[in-house]
Length: 592
View 1 (tube, rainbow, N blue to C red):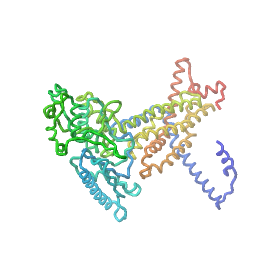
View 2 (cartoon, helix red, strand yellow):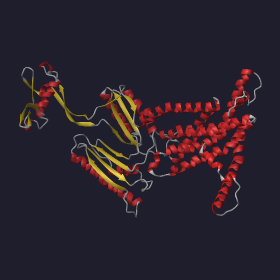
View 3 (cartoon, one colour):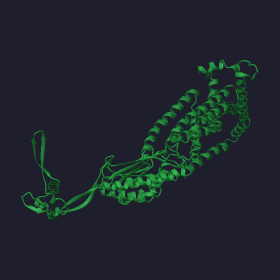
View 4 (cartoon, rainbow, N blue to C red):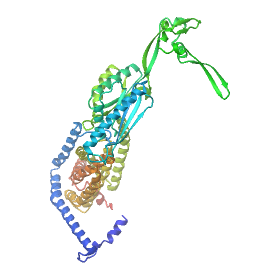
């Protein structure tokens, strides 16, 4: 508004130029030739492609409108039928593979180390295979390095494999390909609590994560076992794990009926057992700067075997002693490692990853669990309540936020346009085009092999702004044509013709600006591609919507207003007199 008019005022195009092809003048001359060629192409497209189509659409409105409806319905059907896939979050390619090993609590450190070392040895074979296949003749290795860690504790270990950066290795060598081959070479490992071959790239949490909530621990654990088994039987899932692993072995006492008449309870007996085997502090005294604590417990020979429990004597309140095996039974069971709560209820969470993201999505897996697996489990364990976590929870939070913000943004857009055009119907027609633009957004994701996800939705928000921009250009010219005295149909037709170049070039330049991102193969670009696809394909289709569908909406809106006024007055009503631009002109209001 300030700088551009000054540039245009000093343009050499406003002055007569000598026809020369030497030096800088020759360059400008060639540029003018190119501009003339571009103008000729644009005029040809407007006169011989767009104008006949617009005439046909305005003449056969319902036929033209039905084509857009059919395209939208086919898109929705393809989406629901799984042809166009949807997901919560995109899967971002990773340059790192992390293998996490968890053995039962209490496992000897040497056993844990031997298994993770076996996996490390198999990873070297995978590295050799991939290097010989894809980097033959190169001095580089497919794996930059591997890092093995033991701990925390003696039952956990990790192996981290750092791959070559995505730009330096072939597209075929993805992190999930590496984990699949490594899993195949390692094979089943007996006795592990969990073995997860993490391929990374899960933005927003685990793709599939279900929390079972309840206060009945037995039913929770039984439901967990059935759900976990169902997920293990599904070939589309891998790395199934839960946050309720078995703890170390514990001795659990259960009192017999004759214990309570003797004045004994479980707590007192447990304290005596603990004091005998673990010890009880009998004295504490100071010796110089040191504090000495004296503990009393059984001799090593009397506390080195579980059978020593049978010979242990329990003191009763009367001072008598009775053998432990006469007043209590004991069993050896694994305890709990952790106790988790969610919303005030005991929680056990089961999570997993997708074996092949190209075959299915987290959305489809959760629909399978909701519809086929959980109903039977809930029927058997009525105290259990499922909660779908991971990416599903994050997506829900984002959608809830966007629901409020999105409606607010649409309302502000509507009010801004309504105040600008002093019309309540024309802004509504612009917003009605938004659902139709989703046709190109969905098929754009299909062509690029991306599922429609949350990031695509953020791109749609940007698309709305561009669509409204193009629509304002056409509606503004349409209102101007009406004020100049053109008939309604001719004003609509000429508005489309005169604004064809501006709308078309806006879309072409936007798509051209996004083209480098659409064809970029680097791993960092994969995160942004869903947004770029939404905008680029959406604005390409929105050009057609603005130039064809918006005139149809304006025509339908005019017919509705004519009908309403005819019902109210009963007289003849022209198409022009119900439009806001003509009403303002007849009332003497200067719209400018």
